[in-house]
Image (cartoon, rainbow, N blue to C red; front, side, top):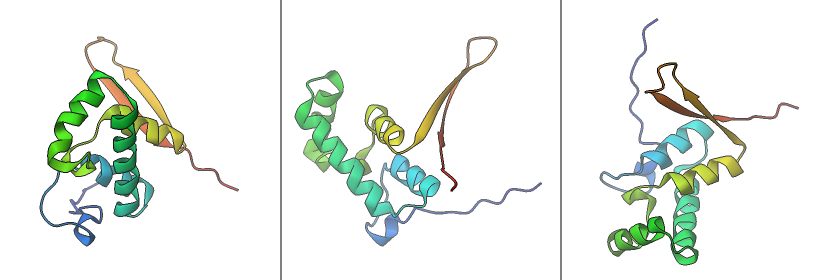
Length: 115
């Protein structure tokens, strides 16, 4: 079986120009079929809320990065925020450890209800 590479920016070019560190937004867009801007706006709001409400090492790190992009998902995303978002949107997390205990694999899967 041959796999062909298909380039896709997940719909980012419909809203923004240039390159970005938005791989999480693009991955969620591809996996869910949602519009890029919907996912982008949701993660942007979650980033801003996390920065405003939390006093953690992560929130301080995010605050230091907000001077450039204001918490934009285009400047990177943090697992704490997007992982919670995925779980709240019917995704399940799976954690696998290999037999030699040196390699770990984390997977997320979408639970789709069929009626």
